[in-house]
Image 1 (cartoon, rainbow, N blue to C red):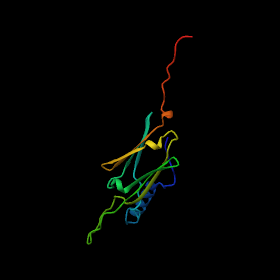
Image 2: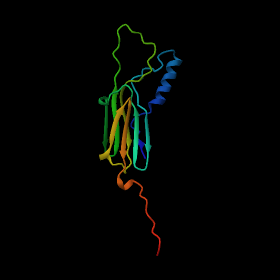
Image 3: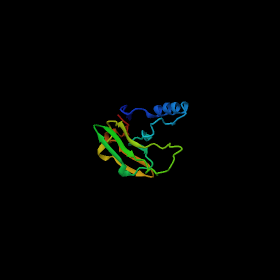
Image 4: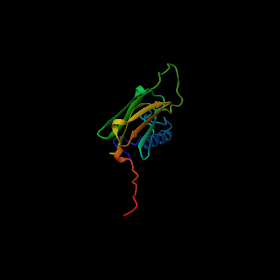
Length: 145
């Protein structure tokens, strides 16, 4: 089972608080935090593998780095802001930009040498096969004496 490493703060609560403060004081809803973001991640498991899907719209595969070190899967990258047009007045900016890092402790039964990752249409999909010893085996029961 994956465990989220708590090195990264939970920005969603912070965004909600700062948005509400910004609204209360009639100012910027994000209160200066528009550059911080964490892409959402789904994690699923079957008998043979773990699967991680991360939403990273607006990035290319070259913008994302994926590593496994000491049984920890780390996704990191940066979503850069678009070039600002001189003379343009922005009325609302809800998309988040900036660097991100997500780290997850892998179960010991994942074979990190066989991990595969693909990126398509803003989704990064990581397949982490389980080691042969971790896959449930059906045991035949003999009859007789």
